[in-house]
Amino acid sequence: MKKLSVALILCFLLQILFSVYGSKLVSYKTNPFLILVVSVAVPVLAFFIIRMKNRAKMVENSSEIPVQNSNLTAWLFAFSAMLPMILAYEELRKMWVKFPDPVKISDVIPQLAAQNKWFWAGETPNQLVSFPTYQAFPVYMPLHWMPIQVAELTGLDLRWVGAGFMMLSFGVAAFFMARSTANLKNKWSAALLFWLMSLPIWAFIVWNPLEIGVSFELVVVAWYVLLAAGLVSKNYWLIGIGVVGTLLSRYTDFFWMPTLAVLLWQFEPKKSSFWLWGSAVAAILLIYVFPIYLPNPTALMTGIKYHNNIALNGWSRTDDECFSQGLNFAMHLRLWLPGVPEKSLFLCRLLQGLIMTGVFAAGVFFYIKKWKNEMSWHVFSLLSLQMVLVLFFLSSPMTFQYYLLVPMTTAAMICYLTMNDEL
Image (cartoon, rainbow, N blue to C red; front, side, top):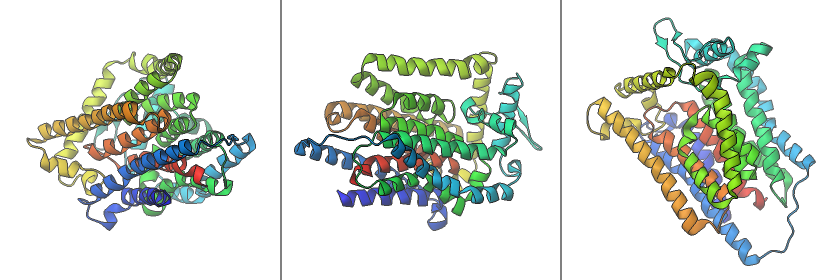
């Protein structure tokens, strides 16, 4: 089992390496295959390790009474988890100085800032943003850009808001994950596991600071961290916050929500489903539907059409950055799939949808039929979420490097979940 644990950590580290630095080590055509192998290996290895541990516990039938960590211990874990981000302050500051005006490199932050400004001024946040040579129609969801208001009120560089949200999410996650973990043999070693969550951001700081300097992805990472922490700690408040936060920021886990819904309904009291989904629907109505969608219902389809045109433009170019970075299989699918770009792009998305449906159907079927007595549905849901995130980005026609911060960070949380009782 120790060999599998070593392999798990190694695959996690290689996932970071190939996601952030892979195109500088190997051919951009080869890199997606390496990312696929090591990224999928993380939830797969965790699955087998957790099953083996649970089987061993059932055989031992241990009478030891679990002792939960105290609040003081949990707070110390929370500080430990935030410490690497605190230590990153100077590197981040230099990064903001190095890229003082992100609009010269990327239009992401200007669009997010415009949406936030328009919303709080009582205007629709879905309207054209003008740039020197073109106009963009922002397709970002409200819990991606609403935190920017903190920067507006405090005068901070809005990128500090993203870093702050991410750091706080690490602290919250570590607190609740530590509180739900019993009988840790070596708390110092366990605390180091929480540092794994910061490794992806440090990899970008060292190898590719541009991606962090011109994006606002750290807020999205924070929402996914809270969702994953809720699953690890079996805390339904965190799960609910994570569901709303992820759906209203980067909603990749939309394809995972059926897995959560089925397993929650199947293995928990029905009131848990009504509470979780009722609260989520209410929050989505209050944050997005009533204030943003209903006043301008055509904006959503306009944004989807704009996004599709951007994807088609990149799909039709051989020099598109999404291909040359070697982050997914887009460059291969474009060659393998038949037809003109419009048709092959449609087939790419169809294939992506089939993969997502397959992960859901196979995962739920085999868990209920074979694995339900070998691990909790919360653990299996997290592993399933990781598979969805990895396979979605790998099969997407358009994946930017900073998107991969999310599956790298949630992979770190899987490492904690799998290894904390070994320490």
